[in-house]
Length: 214
Image (tube, rainbow, N blue to C red; front, side, top):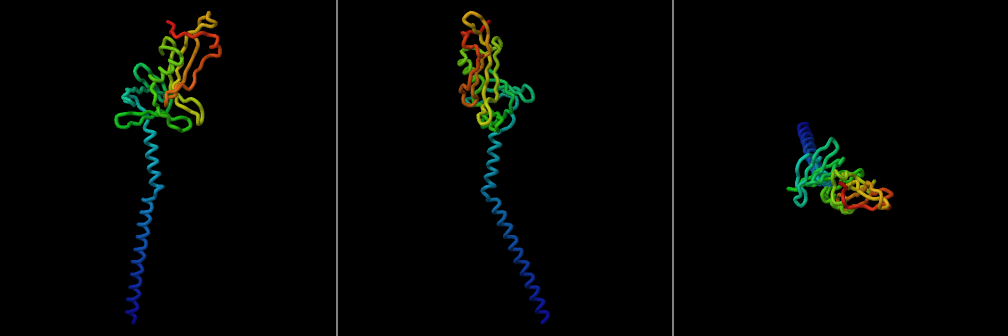
């Protein structure tokens, strides 16, 4: 009788161990399945990849091909300043400039103070021509102390990435006194539109010339 009880006890004990093992294994398998199929987890991974793709990597010195096959040069000026050059036009940028290569084209971005990454869709050559046309000037050169800078303008949600062209323009006050005045124009680097122009307060008293003083 004792042997029968011992055998029954051992049988029930072994059966309990097997059942516990099956339950634990099933729970682990279900938990892993839920974790791997979690849409929020997968969405988070996908969002992280998209963010990294949009930010790109830090722009480095070299020659690149932009949209439309335009050749772009990136020159490092110092630790936080780079120069974008297209043909005879260039613009310095003291900004966090990144690059993202897609197939055989490279796009450039600058991070604004509000956290937005603004794409540099307009290059210095186009921005310069737009600004010069608005200011009624023909050239941007050392003779008229012309400079072009890619910078952030505006604040908060209104922050934009823009080219600022500054130049000393020949003028005559009251049509008699010959002088030069500092004028400027800002061109949106994303859409090429004029944001604003700047002139001294007395500009309405002066007649401006389209010619550059020799």
